[in-house]
Amino acid sequence: MAINWFKYSAPSSFYPLAGKMVPVFMTLAIVLTLGGLYWGFFQTPEVLSDQKQYYKIIYVHVSSAWMAMWLYVVMVAWAVLGLIFNTRVSYMMASATAVTGGIMTAISLWTGAFWGQTSWGTWWDWDPRMTTQLILLFLYIGYLALQSSIEDTRRSDRASAVLAMVGLAIVPVIYYSINCPNPNECASLHQESSLERVESNILIGMLVTTLGFWMYCFTVILMRVRNIILRRESHTSWVARLEEMQ
Amino acid sequence: MKEFFAMGGYGFYVWSSMGFALFLMLLEPIYLHMQHKSIVKHIQRQIRRESARSKENQS
Image (cartoon, rainbow over all chains, first blue to last red):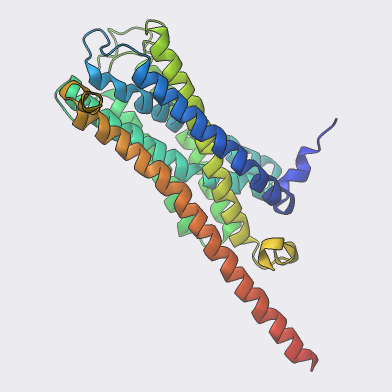
């Protein structure tokens, strides 16, 4: 069956579709996140090499840090689609993604600070991994600030899309700061990514929680994009014909 | 149970992290739901106003 994807680039057909997807993603988000955390807290060893019980922060820390980085790529992808095809829904998706991306970055920084305090004895350090994550937070904030500062939506969509694309340069920097090809060249406090060495039970907890976080992000992004669509299209006849408006 | 929440003496750090994530991840959908309701109400009012105005013009 061929699906006409362009059909869903019209807000009037995307709005009801998003509404149908929200409960599905929300259920998956709750089941997977709770399942992942249950596994992480109850089916894994109490200590991880030199790390004591505080290493359990890993489940939210790694999941939110991954989401923060990936959502930035997702946001830029929507922005680029908007620039190429000039589809309004793409721009709306980009700005709906930005807020959730910012929240994920904030969670990763907060949980990282608490983990850092127990593990290294400091809440914060200007090490490359943490600094780039902080810059990522500022990029999300900058994107949203730029968008809200220009009143004309078409112009604000395009301007913020370009800013998002320029900021994409941060993503490989973040990636290499944790997956450094030669550790001697990038001295940092933050440990290297050690996915291959981590015990499989811990890895399962982490991956399932991350999947739950993905579903959570889909849920709130779709909820937000529905609000953005309604606000921007409030004067159109299709909005007036919606069942919930009667 | 008490032992579980104590997290070997690191309870404060573990639960502060989990609590912060839980707080934001509950707040976001609840806020969006409330925002949706208020936008719908706003548009309903707008539709009523417009239909009242068009009736006035007709009469």
